[in-house]
Amino acid sequence: MFEFMMPPFKNYPVFLKIILMFSMLMFNMGIVSYLAMMPLSSLFGIEEPEKIAQGLVATDAEAYAFLFVQGLSALGGFALTALMFSVLQTGLVLEPLGFKRYPTFKMIALTFVSIIAAQFFIEWLVSINQQIPLSGSLATLREYQKKAAELTEKLLDHTSFARFIASAIVIAVIPALAEELFFRGLLLGTMLRSRMNPYVAMAISGFMFSVIHFQFDNVIAIGVLGAFLGFLYYISGSLLLPIIAHFINNFMTVLFKYLHHTGVISQDIVEMNTPWWLTVIGISIFAAMTYLLYVIKQPTNFEEPIEDELETEE
Figure 1 (cartoon, rainbow, N blue to C red):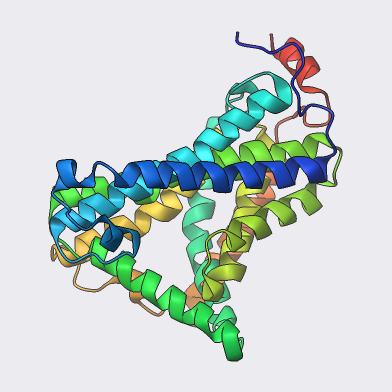
Figure 2: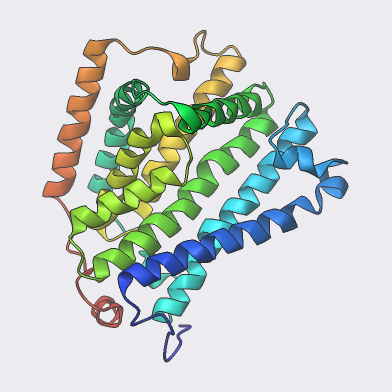
């Protein structure tokens, strides 16, 4: 087991740790994004890498190049930062991030149902968010989100199975792993071990999770989703549970878009308006599953020092 004797960040106050981890995140993401742009010409034949940086995607090659940069940026930013900071804070790599604990099958099953039902809750929250008026310079936030949505549609507007796999990896697999490592394993885990109120910690991590996505019309929905993913981490002590939920949430968009563009389903389910009665049913199921998950929560050791936790598990 790889371990440092005296981790330099171990005794820092939690607010300073949060500042340092986000500073490291920005630095790592910037460096990795820059390095990821360098081989675009040789790998994808892209002669103007700055177009990829601006999200100007028109051809298959440009789409693959953009996915390549996005995937490496997420891994180099979120995942690498989580692993590096974990070592600097505890002297350990994966254990403090929740990789030595495993959820029960019942928890996994309830999580699967809850994240499916949560889509109706998320859609309802987005509709509320869209009613919030913006004026002046803040109105550019919606313009930025519109461009991001158009880019996502371009990336998913295809009938290629290879593009489907590439999109699923970059949009669903990598964010589920990398973002959960950072926001739940590192950020939330650090706050929980600092004796912070767990529900305050979930709310803070959910808020930061929503802010980093830069989607104003989705900020409430993403924040609530982030808090729910934090809840899954808190009740299980395992990072695998929020990873599973995060993957399902993102993968459904990629899958339904692909099925629509290939003609398997006639309507774009992602863009459909859900009837109010179905929304009520979905929210009710989500609330029931969340309650059941809380009832069967596993004992966790967030209140104990990491060294004691590892000794207990061994």
